[in-house]
Length: 48
Image (cartoon, rainbow, N blue to C red):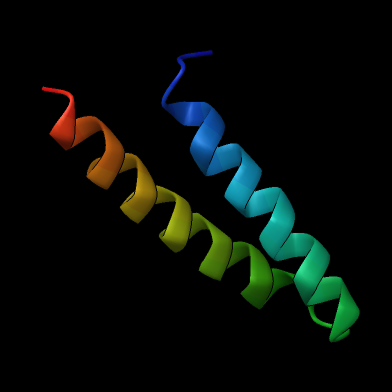
């Protein structure tokens, strides 16, 4: 597992948790995936 993938996994898990609070986990997972990908590109583009 690469260090930058941890951000995506964490956002997906958080999104699923929030999605379960509103009784629909799948949209929460997708939103978490998108946010995680954006955060990953923001953080690791700066370090390059």
